[in-house]
Image (cartoon, rainbow, N blue to C red; front, side, top):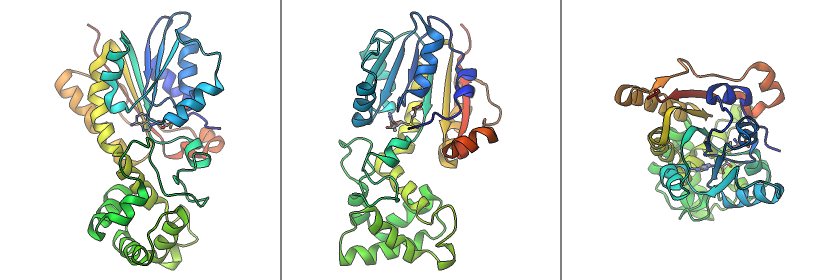
Length: 296
Ligand SMILES: C[S@@+](CC[C@H](N)C(=O)[O-])C[C@H]1O[C@@H](n2cnc3c(N)ncnc32)[C@H](O)[C@@H]1O
């Protein structure tokens, strides 16, 4: 079961009121969307978007009594938020939420190799329409490109030796499963790191997931589009989970302040309280930032 991250803070910064409309760009299991709906009744709507069709179908199957006039669901990439909202004629937009990344379901049940606790096909795509899986990338890219991905998007200090071991292993047999990749990574990391936390393969998996799904480009595109469709006084709230994403959010928000007069509501990013981290360790690295479009 996915526990929504920073639930109180999302509400504090989105400030939903009765009759208002919100877009939840990362519906997941709907935790944030439902708490917004609780505060916007009886007529406010939420447009819930998720790129992962299987996750979305599962959500709909679990909530057969959903009132479509209040929660509208759409499958799509949040980089296309404007197009999705326009197609559904969803307006005005009083607030937008992005809770970036993947849900616990992806790790635990999707069977797509997002984590390394189970041996699964090394897929890592949210949308199976994305042309190449993580296994495809790992077996195709030249060593230098793999090294760059691990260094830039995993901030992995052993990027060179890991990428070299991957290339050696795949020459013997293509790497197609999570545990085959973990084995290659292990050979590229000094032995003293093998039992340390976080797990030595964490950064490699993060980097590949970012590469496969073009996660940073999606975020770069989504932020100005989301801001653009807000009505005056509307708010944009973003939760990110690693420094690369947070840097993009911070910089884009600054640009929107300079070019459009956006009001930054969080001078510093908001992190979860220790109590939340204890009950939901996944929230540990979460950072929330929010901006507001000036009132007309
Ligand atoms: C952290 S979960 C959201 C959890 C949700 N806020 C909740 O309370 O249950 C992120 C969700 O975003 C989806 N996602 C990832 N990249 C996306 C993208 N580019 N566009 C739309 N959805 C995306 C994932 O499939 C996942 O379900």
